[in-house]
Amino acid sequence: MKKLLLVIVVLFASLNIVAGTTSANTQPQGQSISPSEVAFENEFRRLWFDHVLWTSNYITSATTAGAEDQKDVLTRLLKNQEDIGNAIKPVYGEQAGNKLTELLKEHIVLAGKIVDAAKSGNTTLVNQLNKEWYRNADDIAAFLSGANPYLKQEDLKNMLYMHLELVTNDLSASLAKDWNARIVAIDEGVNHIIHMADAISAGVVKQFPDKFKN
Image (cartoon, rainbow, N blue to C red):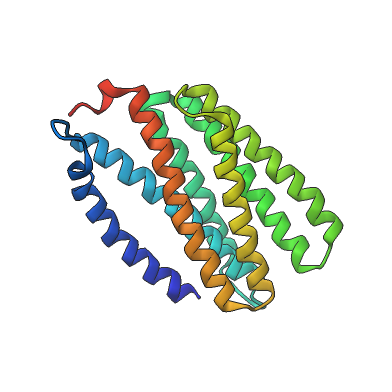
């Protein structure tokens, strides 16, 4: 499964290059996309792709008996939340970037607790943690929409809820050892997170056009 994820990384890197070179061609005639906009959007997309990649890697480690890399993978996953927060600091400032990191780390910590509860078959605890997980998603949506008038809270909630659903599908398939279903869940998770990342970065560019002119 980890080899599969590494293959996805390579494919994604290739697609990312194509996206950067073709996005300008999809602009309306007479308009162009600046190098700084391409760089920001591609980097933001990569960071959110890493979010799905390392979340899925963590599920693999946490549900595999005797896996020795669980702690290291979790450390890398939590760093990804710092990277996403840092990515918005140039436009929203230090405090906002740190707040986003805080919310995303809570998202990961809750996910880890859900994995443990699901492994032990504690359905009651899973349901309790799920409520907190979705509450955290609401908090992330409220934070992002509050910072950017072009990001609608309801749209963000729907995208974040879908992300949670796809992570849950990944975990459920892993626990059931249904590898075909897990591959589908990972593929869908990657496609969805790219869509979500692009929606957020487009809103940022629209809010701060002067920062992406060159």
